[in-house]
Image (cartoon, rainbow, N blue to C red):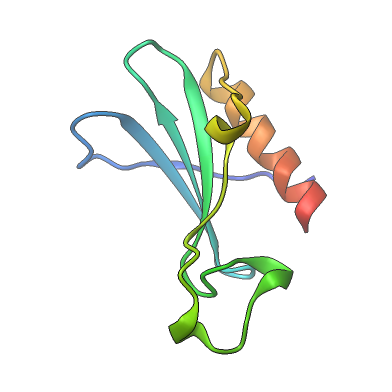
Length: 95
């Protein structure tokens, strides 16, 4: 399993945020910590806006930036490592 390395974004004032960019797939992963100390993650596309195998050739007509958000499935995690492992599992399944 690939180890996903996150770096904290220092400029974020409201939510603590960490990110990981995967240049091979064109996806960026974010982990957020909300004020209730719950963690959740989102996977976005920074190259091919729809991400992975669903990429269309005409990027100008694509409006899909967020590929997956764990909040949509009501998935919250109790600590950072638990959330990081969930991101690694997501990459393992979708790659």
